[in-house]
Length: 90
Image 1 (cartoon, rainbow, N blue to C red):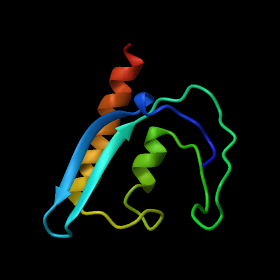
Image 2 (cartoon, rainbow, N blue to C red):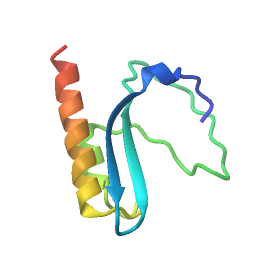
Image 3 (tube, rainbow, N blue to C red):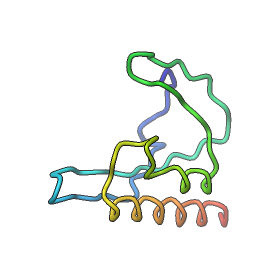
Image 4 (cartoon, rainbow, N blue to C red):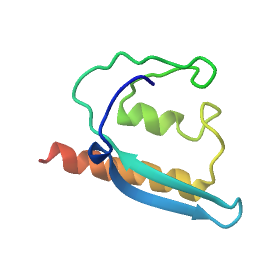
C-alpha cells in the first residue's frame, strides 16, 4: 500500500485456527496517529478506508470482507475492543 512501517510497530494480539476450513487467522494491532497517503496496487487493492471501531464492528463479517466463521469474527472484535480500550487508558 505504499507505506513503510517497521515490523516492530505491529503488535500480535491473537490467532484463530479453524479445523473446519483449515485456515489460520492472525490479528495484529497497529496504532497510527497520522494520515498516510496510500499508493494502491489496483490489481490487488480495491479500496482503503479509515473507520472507527464501531464502524468496523458493523461491517466486519459482511460481504465487504471474505467469509469468516463466527468464532473468528467474535475473537477479532473482542481483541480490537480490548486493545483500543487499553490504548486509550495509557
